[in-house]
Image (cartoon, rainbow, N blue to C red; front, side, top):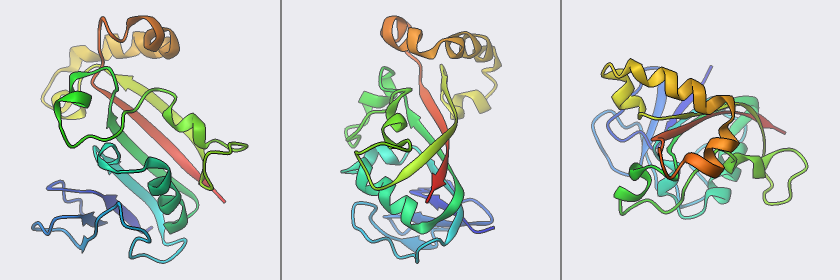
Amino acid sequence: MKKLNLGCGRDIRKGYVNLDRVRLEGVDVVHDLNKVPYPFKEDEFDEIYCKHVLEHTDNLLTVMEEISRISKPGARIKVIAPYFAGQGAYNDPTHKGFFTYKTFDYLLPGGYYSKAVFRILRKRIFFFSSREFMKGKIFSMFPDFLINLSPMLYQRYLCWILPAAEVHYLLEVEK
């Protein structure tokens, strides 16, 4: 399996090709994600990991089309992004896009927004960021469970009162 850690920053992952636009220790490929094509051949990757990177791109649809191009059919795309209503989405002045529970619904089969097509295998909203969760904020699991029982109800009526931190997606490339 060939795996890509897209926009890795300092999160260098063993067993992945680590790509970032800045030459940092452990970065294998230096490339700006806003410049296409990416320096990979078609159908090269089985998995692409995108943690807190897609919100920094100029055009999400162009990036997703390029992710699709370099992915094998059936490849898994893991995306972690700041949830649009949480402070993490707005705190960083380099964020250019925002992510909701339904963001990737526009790239489902039959869509007309993009040449890239994905199946959504899983999506969940989390009150705490994955970094906070890993530091022991396990009590977050109960509210996460509740909001994910009816995520659209939460997104429509409660997200501005009790803002979540992240939204996670697991996508599968369709070709």
